[in-house]
Image 1 (cartoon, rainbow, N blue to C red):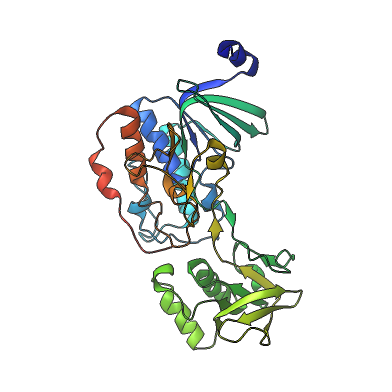
Image 2: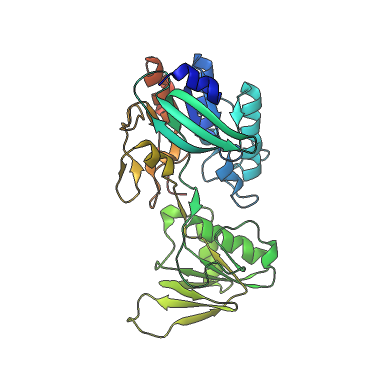
Length: 360
């Protein structure tokens, strides 16, 4: 094939590194590459920090500000406490402006083709409102996160208008009957906020009690107190099996099969049972996916997958996390490892930032 002629016909953009994803770790990598003089292009299917835009309004991070700060830029909050969704999104915008990063948002990758070694080893096609763009890159980094879509229960009624897999804010549930399904951080936080906003909240969870490692430590005593006082109705060891317009039918896990279902009246239903990763781009590139999480096979020392030249950064390295181990705060080290492998320079001393905290 005549690559020069092909490039001219298709208006191909050539670069050394193509970063896919503009969340915190993707942006931190862009800053690092720019500082090291490594040519790169960064694209994202949505806005910067898109996953975080899906957090409930005024939600606060589990991690302290200094642990989710990126690129050496201090993250300062108004009240010196945990960072809110809104503060962090503003912070990310500030980082992009401060370093004048070239982030091409709302440009979705629709194809990755892997060829022979060379400057154009990876041929990537994207789609945006402006049409189709094509890139050729020596290396590709997938920093696409692990929360591309919500998990589904695959039960009748799951797609009814009054049912949602995401919690935005509590106002709409004022004086309405709300059933929340789930028992970890998202469900617990939604239950507390909606109760305080005047909703009549019931909470269905398959576990016997709330898992301490999966609920923010300042929320656990609150939810337990509200349940004990009868302000929130807790339905442990139950799972929904059918949703209809006015109620949800729950199966009791501790009772024999065929037992009567528990009928819970509900005007609204929130199914807050977690997220799943989108592994399409890894599969497209031929990366091996492993284990229950279907995480990409990679070398932890370099973050390079088993497709030479293709790297993974951030929580995407874990696949769909059923038991969370990767967060923003312990993924900073991925940037250091990738940069070191790309440039041949030793790992910087800040590698010590890689540590782990409880599940969020």
